[in-house]
Every structure is written in C-alpha cells, then in structure tokens.
Amino acid sequence: MAPPHGRHDPSTARFPEGFVWGTATSSYQIEGAVRADGRLPSIWDTFTHTPGRVHRNQTGDLADDHYHRYPEDVSLLADLGVTHYRFSLAWPRLQPEGYGPLNGAGLDFYSRLLDSLLDHGISPWVTLYHWDLPQTLEDSGGWPRRETAEHFAAYAALVHQRLGDRVEHWTTLNEPWCSAFLGYAAGVHAPGRTDGAAALRAAHHLLLGHGLAVRALREQGAGAIGVTLNLAPVEAASPERAADRDAARRVDGLVNRFFLDPLLRGAYPADVLADVADVTGTEHVRDGDLALIGAPLDFLGVNYYTPLVVRRRDAPTPGGPTPWGGAADVETVKRGLPETAMGWEIAPDGLYRTLTRVWREYGPPPLYVTENGAAFDDRVTPEGRVCDEERRGFLESHIAAAHRALAAGADVRGFFVWSLLDNFEWAEGYAKRFGLVHVDFETQRRTMKDSGRWFAEITRANAL
Ligand code: FCB
Image (tube, rainbow, N blue to C red):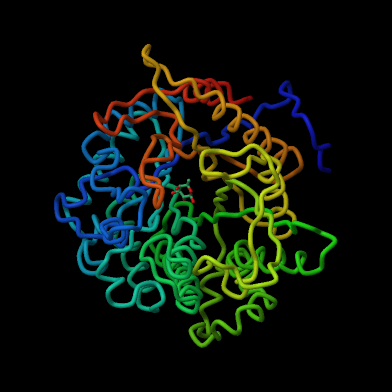
C-alpha cells in the first residue's frame, strides 16, 4: 500500500542492506583527450566544432581532463563513500570507426580505470553508449540506418570479451529518447538533424542495438544487463481540457511508453504508432526485432530530473523543429515551482510517481535510479568551500522520494547522483554545474562541494 504523500519522516528513512549508492558520469562529458591514442571523432566532436551549436561554442576537447586525471577522480569517489560508479565507455576511443578491431590504447585506459576503481572497493557500472557515436557511422547513415545497431552489438561483444572479467553491471544505452529525438528530430543534440522520420527510425534501431547487444552479452555469460531510460510523469496543463489530456497521452507515449513497452512488453504502443503514422510507417521494424528488444533484463535504470506538463497549442509550435513527432502541436508549460539552473522545475514527487508507476504497470526487473541531480550556479568561496545548500536540498528530497517508492513496494535497489564532477553539459557547455565536486575549468582544480560531504554521510549511514 502506498504511504501517504507529504512530508517524509526521516526517522524511517533507512535503506535496505546492500542498497547501491553511486555517482554517474559519461565519457564525452568528462574525458577530454579527444585526439589521444587513436580516438577518432564522435558525433559530439563534430557537433561541438560546428559554430552555433553549443553555448559559447564550447567543446569537450578538454572537459574535466579525466583521461589523465582519473586517479584523482577515483579518490574523490572513495571520499564520497560510494560503492558503485556509473560511467560510459567512449565507443570512438575503443573502436574509432565504429567497426573493426578494438584500439589497444583505448582498452588500456579503461583497464587502468577499472583496476583503480576495484582497488578502491568501488564496483564499476559500465554504460556502453552514452551518445558518442563514432562519426564514421553517422557518415554512413547513423542510427536511422539498421546496420548501426549491428555495429553496436559487435562493439558490445568485443568490449565485453576484453573488460568483462572486471565488470558485473552492463548498461547498453543511456536515454535512447534523447539520442533519437533530440539528436535527429529537434536537432539540439548531435548529430543535429531535424528529420522526424529519421528520429523514429533511430529510436527503433537504438532499441534493436540494445536487443542485439543483450543477446551477444548473454551468449558470453555477462553478469547483469540493463538499460537506462529518461522517464517522467506527463501531465495535462488543464486536465479538464480534452485537447490537453490528449497532448499528455501523446507525449507520455513518446517519452515513456515508446521505450518501456517494447523493452518490457515486447510491443510498441498502438496509440503511439497511430500518432506517428503521418511521420513514418513501420517498414523499418522487421519480424523478430521486438522479440530481441523485449528479451528479459536484469535491471532497469531510471533517470529522472523533472516532470512534463503539456498543453495543446491551437497552432503548430513556432520556433523550429520539435522533438515530438506526431505531437508538434504540443508545448510544455511551467507551473511556477522553484527551478534549477537548467530551468527545470523541482518536483521530487515526480520521481516517486515514476518509480511506482513503472513498478505497477510494467512489473519490471529491479529498478535503479541511474541519474538524479541538479545544476545550480555554484561558486567557490575564498576559503575554498562551495555552499550548495540548494543541491543538498534537491538530493535529500529526491532520495526521500525514492525511499517512499521503496516503502510503497517498488523494488528500488540503488541511487546514482548525476554527477560526480561539474562537466560538459551538452548544448549548455560548461555553463551548468551538476557535480558533487566543483571543477575549475581553467585550472582543473577539484573542490568537494558541501552537497558532496553531505552525500558521503548518507552513503555511509545507508539512511537519510
Ligand atoms: C541526462 C544525461 C546526462 C546529463 C543529465 C543532466 O539527460 O543522461 O548526460 O547531461 O541529463
């Protein structure tokens, strides 16, 4: 039975024994060293080097220079008391063109990182794809092309052969919705295309790539395999307005159900296929694809930041391409709640609702919150402190929401804060700081924020 909503009682907020506490990062956002040791460009290198795409034309060329500074970053993880670290492998570092043999120098880097993590008692959670597609594969068609899915599975299998001895948890994709719809429809992420039909084909081929990779990893006896989705409750701005309720249904269909249904039920939602029928048909979905995509998983990763509140505009959304194929007449609205520096409204209850909804409607494998966190305009004081009370409050309320979901029966097994470090926040460049650790991008100096010190207490107590 669901506990009453409202204030969380801290005296009960112990987490189960073995609850996973971690932080998350991704390769392009932290590594830098984009031309080192045989790495070739990814779509994000090309995108960031195209003027006008990213805030102040910033790039991930240096980022947090984690490629060279990973020993310090692993010590920071140890300081945070986390037992798990979620990070992604850069495909263009490991297999520079997206096919062919693995690059030894790239493997060496990840091998050193894994050893360092294990030496510190930190269990690595590896994501195989967090948006940095080798540019060569984009040049031959990118995710809208079916072969990209096959290349992805081949890469996954090769990487597992070489690193699988030290990695128990494997995540195929991070947030395929963003890859497909921000990258190929809205064009605000790499590769910056604005073609709604291509985005829908990309979404299917990302899912197919996941399914093919799961099969390949299973054949090799991989440990636990999952996928991470960005999920959010979607509400109608005016629930009494039928047009808004329908807008909410369509957006929920595109963000949540278009991924949850094939992965956990082995079928695309019929209403969404009807909504997007004018954008594209389903010729690219072949017999057998959905059986692969719907193969059983060991865990589902949930990334949650903010809910979506939508309404239907009477005219098509002005201001250029939309990520919403089949819902171009929908716009998001705000409710006047406090916001993070991203302009995202703060609504911890949305995490509770997301976790309990997925649990109730899909009966998924164990759930992990694989990303949650907030950007605020942090400053280092002359005494060398970062007093980020807002981030601490944000995390406390969201960890409490995860605890309430657990108390309501959802099998939530872990919580990863986004992010370990301030880093390259995609189209926002270095303007938005999400880290528990502050990074001075001039000097690469790392400073633990107050929120990081607080999080270290939580991970050690296993309680709020
Ligand atoms: C998620 C991404 C992650 C980070 C956060 C803020 O969508 O997975 O890389 O940028 O948002």
